[in-house]
Length: 592
Image 1 (spheres, rainbow, N blue to C red):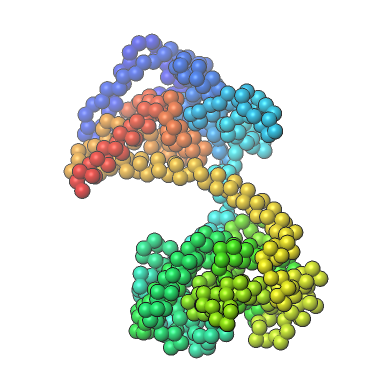
Image 2: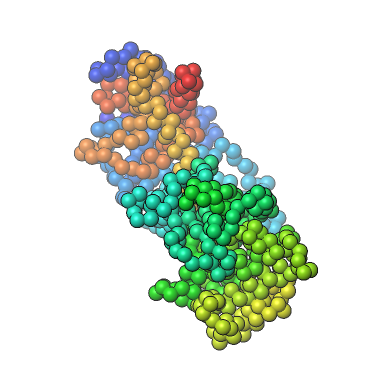
């Protein structure tokens, strides 16, 4: 079979046979119309009226899309086939280059709107508004061309997300030196990895006791959490402490979705580690994060004091956090929660698209929220002593922010500096030092005043965040269709050439399943005249999208031995997919 299919008007029978397999002969009946070598592929009149701009042509590789193109037959392709480059693929569209005012009707959009009645902007009407997507043109000016990268997220974003996923799923080598110090299972957490040296003997200057941090994966929801263990020698768990810890989880539950808080997911008591009962706090794990102390106040080579832009960015984010917490009638715990060791700086995927520099691209979170509520309830105003309540605890939060910004500006810890506020004056601009000194001295006593002082930088940060979100949304749009096509491929994978035992041994080779087998070869297993595989991503995307929607366009399917030939529409093939998959589901539920 070469070139166009020539036949006369009438009923034509095609015998679908396959010599290598034992199966029954199937007769496929269809109505054919007269065609010659220059005629376009047959499209029913009803379809032509509904889709006037859609050329229902069979697949033609890139470079040979034209009205009189011949149908593609595996192994016998026309000599004018031009393989697409590695960077481009065709969408299978025909016609002149697309513009905003002449966009064709989208065959995959089932709803079309009369654009003459739509409003644009401030009430202006436009006849150029289309609900259908407008396909971009390639740099060469050819219509229906776009780079392959337009279908997938950028490589930089994928690398960042893969790195985060790697850190979340990382496990400790069982043969490593510290592997025996951690149990295999801790409560309902497994795959434990220490986040700090758990064998050190020093006491935290902030908490006043020793604590250990490790990563664990919950067997309940599969999410990674930071488990903070309070040393049993400094705090012995009892019923009152456990009850207070549970109340703390409920108290901070509204802040689980806050962008600057590592959510407190739970607390529990366990003796799985070191055979001694201890209290644990479970916070959300943010992969790749580092403490502000390790970023700005450490002794490592890459540790540098925070820049002016970074300090303003930190101040605006801390203001956002304290405003939400204080408006809820709570306090974070002063120096316990706002220490450089208890605030983490998280890598943000949007930083790859930020145009405001690193100062506006970083995200900080309070990583020890709720710990002070259990260990020092007086610092958060839960226990009133000497007239101390939530109001004073909130003022302590603001003072702690001033001291924190001063330490980050100097690049030193509290233990190394006698007066960080005075040292910060020589390193900061006058407006920034005015903010730091006002917070540390208590002159700024509420978040309303704090908000007014950071308002200018908040606007700049908001602009950068929105620009980055727009880029992330565009990256997400590239991957939006891939999940839909994956579900379709999974259905085809369940059906194609399935070797079932209880069912008919030739189930996958007969009936509708045989059509799906031929369609699989049509999509993925085509060859050119030289016998080389045709790796046309555009053909795959186009065919799967049309199959998922079930358009009325017809395709010519040919068996590998060229003894079976079928003509079927995408709508018919879609019904075959749904029917075969439903049959498998029914059989699976019956046997189970």
